[in-house]
Image 1 (cartoon, rainbow, N blue to C red):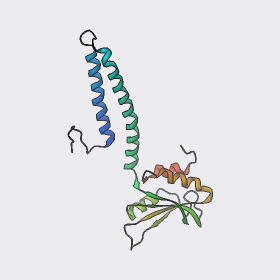
Image 2 (cartoon, one colour):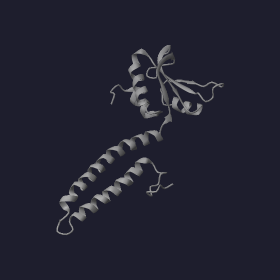
Image 3 (cartoon, helix red, strand yellow):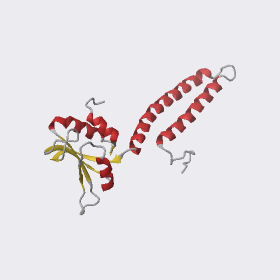
Image 4 (cartoon, one colour):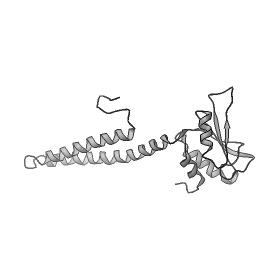
Length: 177
């Protein structure tokens, strides 16, 4: 589906931004070339515009790096909307310690997604599926007192609304990169 500017809106956002960057790059080159016409008469007036377009290209490059990272993460992830940290009888995702632990309770899309998410963890976590509430499926991840910071990190890394193996692995490390 193309918009009125001939952009194919069905493509990933990072590809659309790169397409716009290409157009701006072409415009910047054209302005530079125009500046050399007529014995450089307009060069002085066109150079600031060329510089402005260079700044726009740099800004779009930085933004596109973020967009690409987000899109990449989203394609490898499952919906995971955390409700914050509470407590429940869920094993610690770091060491497997049982009993009443701090936990993240997050809504997920389906029971099948919950089973796939559970494979990200070394110690099985709790899938809270209730037949009488089929649209309110929760996935619960526990963290013992010793690994509360890891649980907080997991909660932080899932803030964007998804979870994947990479996020779980990062939350097991305590470098807070």
